[in-house]
Amino acid sequence: ETGVTQSPTHLIKTRGQQVTLRCSSQSGHNTVSWYQQALGQGPQFIFQYYREEENGRGNFPPRFSGLQFPNYSSELNVNALELDDSALYLCASSSSGTSGGARNTQYFGPGTRLTVL
Amino acid sequence: GENVEQHPSTLSVQEGDSAVIKCTYSDSASNYFPWYKQELGKRPQLIIDIRSNVGEKKDQRIAVTLNKTAKHFSLHITETQPEDSAVYFCAPRPPSGGFKTIFGAGTRLFVKA
Image 1: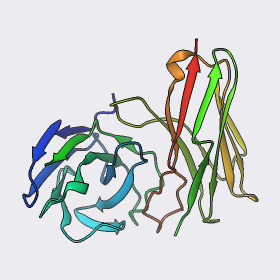
Image 2: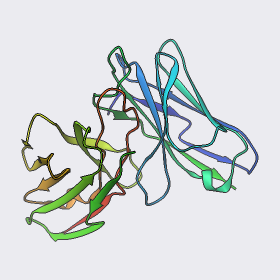
Image 3: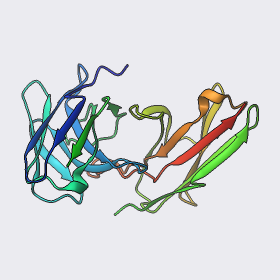
Image 4: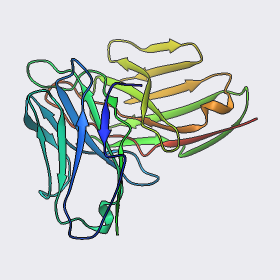
């Protein structure tokens, strides 16, 4: 086990709804990255948070947003859900240097399986 | 941006044989090269990684080799066992300033008993 936890485990929503997913990072880690993993594909980078600020983003629309809290836990929010948002959402924590560069090992949480109907 | 390719996409071996998976990347600035194993319904788990100042690293039955000139690195699994059956991902990463991690599409390894 990595010490990274996510909640909820599973979630079912309908199109147009909004969802919030949560991630608690491993003790001592200050960086959280979020990934979307569709069935049969590799994880796709959504964004990364370091010291409560977004410092890197993948090719995802603005309806994907996030937060990082002073204790380094993080939330992923998705508005106006679409059917294609159905996926496993993974967070990964790591420790980064002063520039926030993610040079160190990432440890993944168990993921949240989101189904959009 | 980084372009990452893995080959093969599927690999089937007999128990006890060796398996090799290759990852090719485009960003010559990449300096961290991990391999993850993901079993069905579970999280990706780091199994081995290598940094650009090292050409090869071994951990029991698993090894990673790096060719920075050719921009590829490979995962080697010897004496494969049925529990090695999983999807394996590479995720090369550039140094500080390159925050985006691009995963390969994955290689599904089947080890037949």
